[in-house]
Picture 1 (cartoon, rainbow, N blue to C red):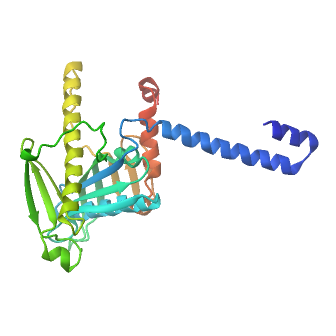
Picture 2: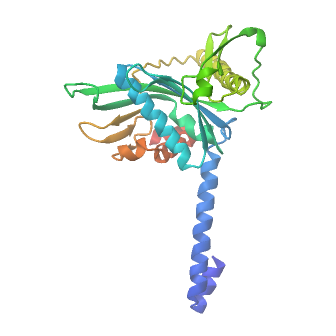
Picture 3: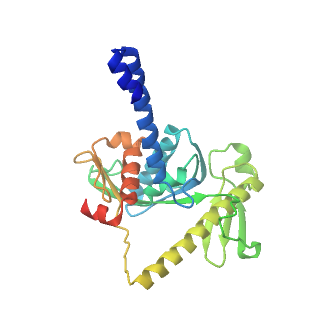
Length: 297
């Protein structure tokens, strides 16, 4: 501001422009710092494991799950994050039944935890000979991938695991398909199952599968703690499959509607191509507001 005032007094256009540029850069820096402040959760700065699962809607739902898988891959690429497809279960006719993605980048989990929930698609079904409108559902779960982080207080006991190996079904080349490099782990006490077929090395797939299992065990413990806290506070919340967090309507009109923040956009194609930041930022801003401020809005 001092440089700006001096520039005005001296009628020095270069100083005024320099001051204006410095002020704009400072405002941008402060905005980034304020946004990062919202990502102050215990594991917000961790990498993320994203699970996409097809739900009600048959083949349309499986196609929708694959569209979501691509959406998160494109979002990661837009941010120059590393993204790996850890495991995928193909649909019988089209699309996928499920997919597991590892997304590695600064605050990947902090951003993507806004995507947890049920996502709904409304469109003319490309699989219906009568071209009828179809509603499809898919669920998204995001977990922090913290590897060997000591703060991640979950222990995996080898005797609690059942290990299955099998041939990869992915596009990994002849070597992958000829060797039993893919790994599936079943955690016997909880029944949790994870699988990885990313690498040609069974050893590497085993290590990645253990990371995935560790994240799911942590989430299971978190859910137990949250349920106990809600019970003690006398709160009863019911989450149903139909309670979607976001709807993507392609027909009879085009709109993406986030039901938590009420943010709407007509740019459906751009959103499905990974332009998720407006929805992520709106959610994080809403979560960062004090309860009374959120209610006032």
